[in-house]
Length: 180
Image (cartoon, one colour):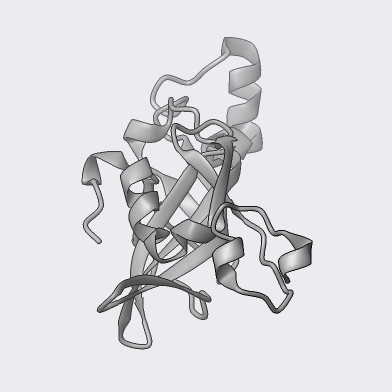
């Protein structure tokens, strides 16, 4: 899946796990509302292309010079040190992986993220077209709660029905208990 590189907001950083990624925000994204953003990254797992999507749950600002006691004393008096204040800031966000999709000849199918992407892997905002493409194989089983928090995409939900019945009764997102 070709992602829109104009929407890149971060790169995978360290330390990261297969469920929680540390991401380093790109300079262009530091003034955007990022907490709550639905994001995704592309990688390869077991030789197959995958797309993993998740949500940013927090951001941390670091400036190692501001943490030094000598500089803190200067900042306490002047309020800033022009060469390092703001210019040496780094912003690190936490991305919780929510879903992974494996690309197949028939489109995308759900998968599990069983590896950790390399540092530097681009992280980008999820757009509605991309989300629709990832969920095509499950579209008859989905419904939408409305727009996702702090995003411009519809939030997909899927409630698995575990009864043994004819799936044609589920298509309207309702199950008639007498038919199952």
